[in-house]
Length: 390
Image (cartoon, rainbow, N blue to C red):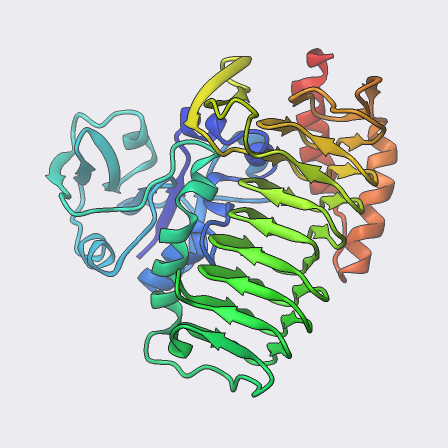
């Protein structure tokens, strides 16, 4: 079975700047990325059909009678069984939304020849970037069941204080936790392979710590929070998603936020997640080029890949930081910081892209990875698409 996860362009744009550098299915919500969820559920390797400039890094395998799945949906066992038995020219709908079909590439645009089948059960779907933290509790619970079913956790140290059901704590091979407090009353806690929770940390589930990620001494985590692989986290974090390969290693508050990859929040970086008047928060929307209502009272920081903040940086409620930014200085910067910005509240200029490449090559090497020519080409494309924002 050939499975292709395809991006609806409108939905893909709703997740900018996070999706500037990846297909929607490569976004992490819960424990796994959407692509990893589908692969585990279906038992196959999936490919992605996304924006043309991303296809070199994320190539799609397009064959006749493939299963095409709308990337914004998350799987479950029941849905996986139905899709495995989907016949050519059959399409699965959730109301008026096309969920998946068995067909060819052309059917992504022309649905008229597809036989409709309705899927009526509850399903996790994401439509806006703030859904990543809003729906993260449900996603962690679903992933925890998917990953741990029929498996045994690595042993938990006797130095750990557990509040709630110990069976809702799962440690992968090599995961370490010592002299910390793990509270599962609100949901499960998952510690990925070779991850570490250092002494004095206090964690409330639902929570996921990715492979080779670390909670530093005395870190405070409120659910529902996801830390992707290869991250170092300190201070206080609540209801946030950090996709991976990013650091918030020191004190400071991060709440109701989404942080991309290869980001670094300097010491005592803080964000506001609640307006002083308790009103609903607006976020900058790239497609509409204006602030839009989220309907949320709590909404913090959205930060694209390769962005950094200096020490003591303050981000206001509902701030969107683009790709490749370097933010520093006193005061609150704008709630919309264009991609490749360099500066802060006292003014910004365009970040020199070659300088960004030099930094990226260094941080990739520190993680044993190579910053490739394809990575450069993607960032150059994003730069060209956003340079008019200045």
